[in-house]
Image 1 (spheres, rainbow, N blue to C red):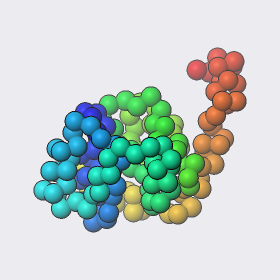
Image 2: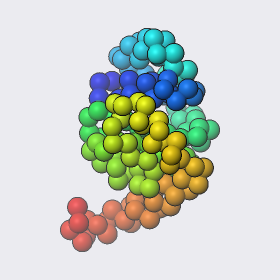
Image 3: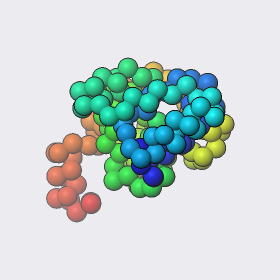
Image 4: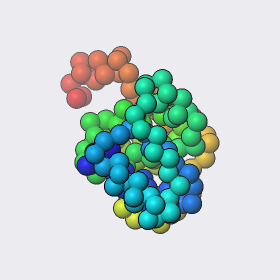
Length: 154
């Protein structure tokens, strides 16, 4: 919960959609994002830091993952982790996140909560998680990275 991670975007999307959300992690902006959730009426559970096994379990128990950073992510590892659990991924075109999202939902205007909720509702399905996982298997992993490096593609 640091500047650039887009927690405020998450809170606003949860409020606009009228759904429950869970924010994992901790950091200096937690109190600010909790206050925003109260002001917006967003039903967000701030679960704090969790060990890796609990993060994997938490990812697998949700209908989708929202990863909406304001500053570039190298790849968006949490998006790959969610896809590996069959969870559809929603992101924005920041850094390498679009590659991690794959066939998931890439929001064009993540600061426009209303249009983002409409885009998610128009595209989301449980099968989208399977497509995200297929994308990870087809495009990521040690063998894929080494092949791309050897080909000079990276």
